[in-house]
Image (cartoon, rainbow, N blue to C red; front, side, top):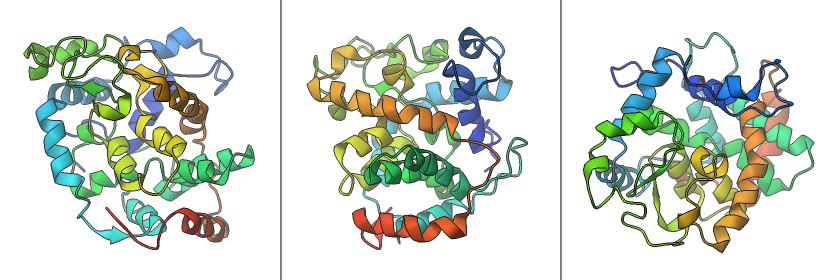
Length: 287
């Protein structure tokens, strides 16, 4: 995945940066204050470059193009566990912080949810929420796979990280898209707006016929930090969104803080998760 438009050297770079920006006071116990984490003054150059490219390219036109390209879901047919093994072929030799495989990362999240006694659909959601990163294996640059998501088609909210980079985005100069509501109407509901393209939107569409609405909200909105962590886009929310926001906030700590170098036993856990997957998904689905 080396290219001039792939400034993040690791898929985990973004998760590591999220930990720096959005810590819980009691997690992960490293002694830093919240303000130190939320500061972007000392962000590594590759993080800044990632967001420069992301904010430059995430336009309405690009988002419509990506949806037309990927949402017919014609890339391949495979089951959920097969998709996890497919994602596992994404070898990350550049990450100095962990040697765990992609499957081990997924299992860490779901096992943390399982340990807290949450429903089976919630455990499954934790297992698969990042599976949309297989877009990287479909030759997609990281600026349209990872990163904080936001609404396109209206003004870019000031809470979005590196907001200044949007000055280079063509939509910021387009009167159709740069007003408060843009192409949307007041309280139209977030399910009726277009979020910036990435693994969240892709996986949400892959799963939307199989999971309960609460799980789908967790998948679609887990990278939507301006909304669930900064309170942005209230003017587009309807009553349903307020309900879903509580589920997304419940999921967020598991997404951020389950990562460690203590590997789960994949072979031991596989039968449990294959049975769980079969409760919600057919043997093969379209990707």
